[in-house]
Amino acid sequence: MDLARAAGVEIIGDVELFVRERNHIAPDCPFIAITGTNGKSTTTALIAHIIKATGRDMQLGGNIGTAILTLEPPCADRFYVVECSSYQIDLAPSLNPTAGILLNLTPDHLDRHGSMENYAAIKERLVAASGTAIIGVDDAYCQAIADRLHGAGIRVVRISKEKHLDRGYFADGAKLLWAQDGEIDEIASLEGIGSLRGAHNAQNALAAIVACLSAGLSLEEIHAGLKSFPGLAHRMEQVGRRGKVLFVNDSKATNAEATAPALSSFPQSIYWIVGGVPKAGGINSLTAFFPRVAKAYLIGEAAAQFAATLGGAVPFEISDTLAAAVAHAAGDAGNDAAPEPVVLLSPACASFDQFQNFEKRGDAFRDAVLALPGVMPMRGES
Image 1 (tube, rainbow, N blue to C red):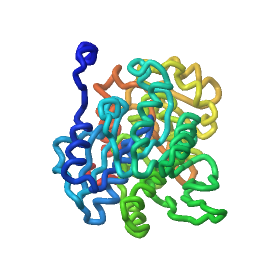
Image 2: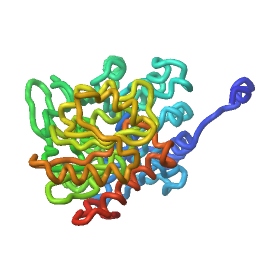
Image 3: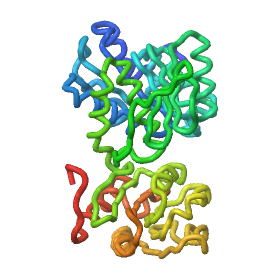
């Protein structure tokens, strides 16, 4: 690629080819593009689900797994919902969605981009040319981007899962609120929607609501889609219940930062299956959540290291294998008097010591849970 650049050869990706085709044959067709360090796949899937549930013609693709050039060609009434990685944005200089979403920014892919500033600048390009720029303002980088684009005259809609906004959309527990000109209105509630549990999912839902409103959907249509959203596999996936015990597959959480939202989503009686190939820092950053954990079940290479971190703060056992951890956690949770004990696989580790990838690990957890006597499946494909 360096040689091509030096020779003046244009280097673009498949998203850029789609953008050029759309601009040529159907420039007004709704095009929602989503990026961010965390949460973009769930937000993308949620938007697609809401739109599809209304009966509209919806095409879902990009980084979420379906190549964008395999989608149906652009036309006026066809909705496109596209997840974009930093790599795809970098190779899409003409990217101009009708609504662009930037959820958050934390250090990632710095080996490619060189610095956090370069990484943020690439992500900013997705919203900079958007008809509506929907930006999560809970980190300093995104806050600065929102301020800069607003100053440049771009329509910016701010969202937050952490703080009340004077103007924008924010979460207060399960309530999703809209503030403008001193008035605050409740636009939706996530109460009772298990697939959107937790503050991180409140942000995802806020982004989806604003994007769908900007695309012309009604609040009634959006509410129906929120309530019927099944969630994504391996991301806080509710796989089954046995009595009052809930089993949750969060295998996608391959580091402590990704596990924090899962632990924060349940107030008590968490039976936590954790371990694998540890990342730098281990689970040291999760100590604030330890009081919520009734017991930990340690698996894989990280077991000894995590045992030392848990120390006397959390009861634990070294289960070694995922199958043993599920069996022991299910038994212990079943004896808990709490209203909703949770057996949570949120490993905070890579999977490669015991599994090919996080998907295989999550599948193994689901299979082990559903093999337990008396478990009622909670996902249609299970």
